[in-house]
Length: 227
Image (tube, rainbow, N blue to C red; front, top):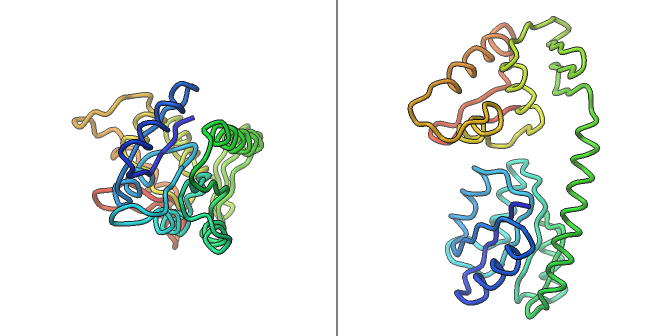
């Protein structure tokens, strides 16, 4: 799994990272809440591990911001705030699990793996969908057919794949880098305009002929699909 860890303790953070990496996970460590929030909004993570007492923006605020933007990445709070009220706050903010400090790494590992299995199960169920729908837009993955308001829309192969990627992430920020990696299988290339070109073509087909646009640009950040 790719994991975001928000932890400002200079000894504990690297220790947790080391343990998780030994188990085969890819871990990005952040000591500042604002930096973690930007990373979580710009990248696809499988799991967030959040401390609640960190500089600039605490883990609770980070998760609230992500949930408000429709980011459903599983989140585990790892914090010294272990009282019942604190735990309730964590779950009400959208947390999936809560592990107070001090803790045994074996328990953290077990909870991480349990959340990973839960996510894998949800993704497996989602991957069996043959028709994606958002409002009056539908995308039939088997028939390779797109319709909006009952009107057929002809999509080229990359446009179809691009729209599928967006429709599986409604309300979430999708960056240019994410699209290059996931839709075109390319690493970051600042000189290519392939993303912008295909976004423009896709908008001309799914948005311009209709009243309510679905694909929005966040200047300097990326794109968001959905109202």
